[in-house]
Image (cartoon, rainbow over all chains, first blue to last red; front, side, top):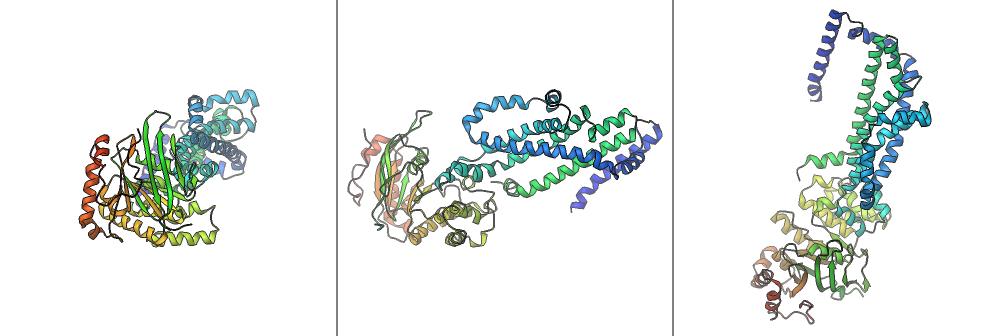
Amino acid sequence: MKARRTFPGVGTVVVLLVAWELIARARQNVYLPPVSTIAATFAHEWFSPQFGEQAIPSLIRMFVGYLIASALGIVVGVLIGASRPLYRLVDPFLQFLRAIPPTAIIPVGILLIGIGDTMKILVIAFGAFWPILVNAADGARAVTSERLDTARIFGLSPLETLVSVTFPSALPGIFAGLRTGLSIAFIMIVVSEMIGSTNGLGYYILQAQRTFAIPEMYGGIVLLAILGYALNTGFLAVEHRVLAWHHGQTARPT
Amino acid sequence: MNAPGERLLDVNGLQKRYTSSGTLAIENVTLDVRRCEFVSIVGPSGCGKTTLLKTICGLLHPTGGSVVLDGNRVTTPPPEMVLVFQDYARSLFPWLTVAGNIAFPLKKKLAPAQRARAVDDALAAVGLTKFAKHYPWQLSGGMQQRVAIARAVAFQPEILLLDEPFASVDALTRAELEDLTLRLRAELGITMLLVTHDIDEAVYLSDRVFVLSPPPSVVVREFAIPLATPRDQERTRSEARFLELRNEIHHLIGRPRETAAAAGAPAPASAPPAGVRAEPAR
C-alpha cells in the first residue's frame, strides 16, 4: 500500500535525474556537471572524515540553537497564551519582532558577539524562537474554557492546570511552531556559516563555489537536502506519536 | 448528619451581573436542594441557566446573595460539588484515554492502587469497562458523556451539577443517559441538580422542579413532582400526573414574567412545600 503510493514519486525523481544527466552531458557546461560526477564527488567527499569536520559542527550548532529556541519558546509561549492580559500586552510587540527576517539579525550578532559558535547558535535560536513562541501562545489560547473550569472544579492549582491542561491543549500549536522553527534553524545555520565561519556546511558550499570546485558545491547542497529531509522525516515521526490523539480527533467529523 | 432529606444546598437571593457588560443575568434566585434529592431547574433558552450553575458551584462570583453547601459558604469550587458540562467534547481531555480522564482528578486525592479501583468502579457504574483504553473521541457522543459522568462520580462529590448534559445526544441515547443518572443517584446516593430546557426531562427525572423566568432570571415557581419511583420511561411518561405537570410547566414557561408569576399563584394540585420562594423580589 505504502510502496504503491511512493513509487510514482520515486519515478519522478529518477526521470528528473536522468534528464539532468543527459542535458549536462550534451551541454558540457562546467557549472552544470552531470549527476554521475556529482554523485561520485559526493561519495568521495562525504563518506570520509570530512563529514565529521564539516557536517557535524553544523548539526551541533543547529541542535543547540534549536533546543534553546524550543525550550524558551514553549515555556514563554504557553505562559503568554495562558494569560489573556499578558497576551494583549505583548502580542503587538511579538508580531513586530517576528516579522524581522531572522537572517537580518546575523550582522547584529557578528557585531555584538563576533563570528564564533556562540553567534551562530544564538542567531539560529533567535530565528527558530519566534514561530515556536507565537504558535505555542496560540495553542495555549485554544484551550477550551470547559477544560479550565473542569480543572478548577477538581481543585487543581493554577500551576497544575498550566502543566496538565493548558500545555497538552497547546501541543498541536507547539508542534506547528517547532516544525517551522526547524526549517528556519536549518536556513540560519547555512547562512550564518556562509557569512562568518571556518567550517560547517554553509562554509563548505561557499568555499567550493569560490574555488570552482563545482561538483563539490553541488555535493554539499545534496548533503543539505538529505539532512533536511531526514530531519523533517524524524520530526514528523515524533509528531505522529505525540499528537496521535490530536490527529485521531480531528480526522473524525464531530 | 448525612440523612437523606436534610438540606444540602441553599441558594439565597443569588444575583449575577456581568462586570464587563453590566448585563444582569440572574436577578434573584432562591432554591434549595435536599440530600439525595433530584432537583431540576427549567427555563427558556438563554435564561442564564449555565451562568446560574457556574455561580452555584463557585466558578463565578455572585454579585449578590449566597450559596451555602452543607453549612459552608461557597466562594471557590468545593470538592463536594462537581459540574458536568453539556459539551463533553470540550470538557474531556482528548490526550488522555477514558481511564486516564477518570483518573485525572483523583491524582491528588488517592494513592495509585485506590485510584485504579475507583476508576474501575466508575467505569463499571456507567458500563464502559471495555472502553477503558479507548480515547474519548473514539466513542459516540452518549458514551463520551458517560465518561464525563464517570469522571464526576469517581471524584465522590456530595452533589452533581448537570448543565444540560443530555442536550447533544439523540433521543434514544438521551433516555438511556437519564436512566443511568437516576440509577447512579440511587446506587451512590449522590444528590443531583440538573439544569435543562427540556420540561419532560425535568419532570421525568426530578423530585422537585424550579421554573426560571427569561433573563434576568428569577424563580417563577417551584413544583413538587409526586410521581412514583423508580421512574420508567414508558410508564412514568404516560401517567396522567406526568402530563398534567409538564403541561402546567409548559404553560408557565411560555409567558412573560409578570403574568407567569401571577398565573403561578394558585398552588398546583399537590401543595408545594412550605415556604415557596417563588415571588421575584422587587
